[in-house]
Amino acid sequence: MHETFPTMRGVATLDAAAAPGYWSQMVSGTDPIFAGEAITCVRGARLVFHGLDFMLWGGDALVLVGPNGSGKSSLLRLMAGLSTPANGQLRWNDAHIIKDRQAHGARTHYVGHATGTKPALTTSEDLAFWSAFKLQNNPTAQRDALAHFGLTARTNFPVRFLS
Image (tube, rainbow, N blue to C red; front, top):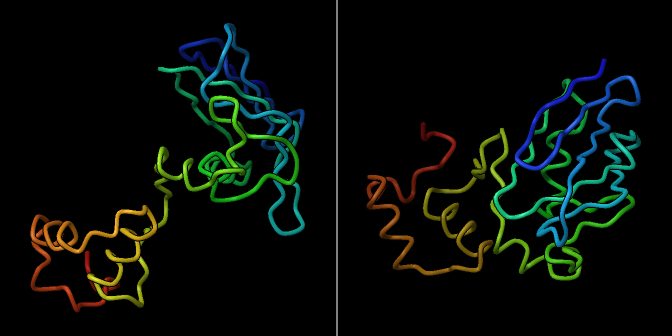
């Protein structure tokens, strides 16, 4: 099976016959903002994908389409710097993202399909955790956020009970 999806700059292809999870991005131009070269992802003992190349310029969009288990979420985690590729390089403005994960984390936002809360923490503890994670540990801003979302009365409430 071979499907083609238009993007803003070229064509993104998914070739399920070549190997599950193998994508390529054909683009033109120079100086990409974000690029991956020969990316290999291994989860546990399973090869998820290998040889992935992509280049994204300002204003580009990368659309990931593939069957369950083909590595879409794994690629997003690699791109966000939350995981490290088994092989290959990820570069932002030609600098390796692994060399400065803190800077890369400050310019990217990963939103996964699972909740980002820590169910064992209270609302205020969870908010403090994520604020510190994003290097913006500001108690006043945290109180303002709780008030904004109507959670002031629930600061000591376990987040697992929130809807």
